[in-house]
Image 1: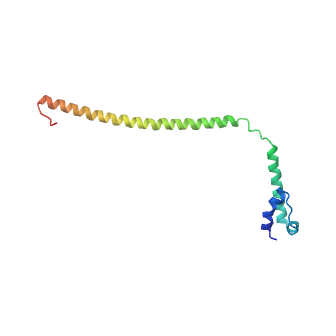
Image 2: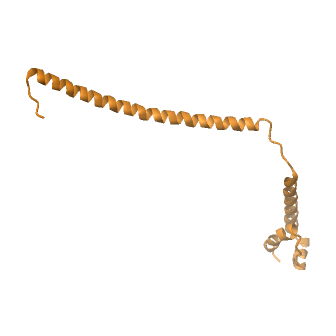
Image 3: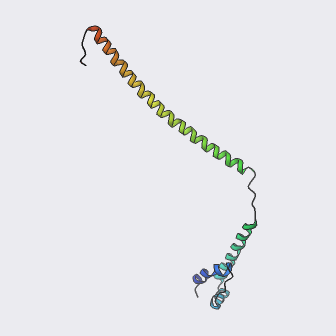
Length: 122
């Protein structure tokens, strides 16, 4: 019997109380590695059983720290959204100003050409 084979059988044997073959039982009795593995597995199961009945009280301030972290993250997101929105608004304003300046220049040139009597082809 190999230790790897025994290790596969230990969970069912310890957790469900399943009977193991005599050869497996003899191997565990003679193998320190498998005995240690069996002890670790039993200790882990006891710890898990304790967790089922134990209620852990959260640290005093954990709720306020969590809420503060959420609020801080949402404020960062809001500032980022505002800045992104402003950039788009600034770009639109600059584009609008450029169109307005072009239209004003065209109107001024048209007005000057009419004063001088130059005809502009339409």
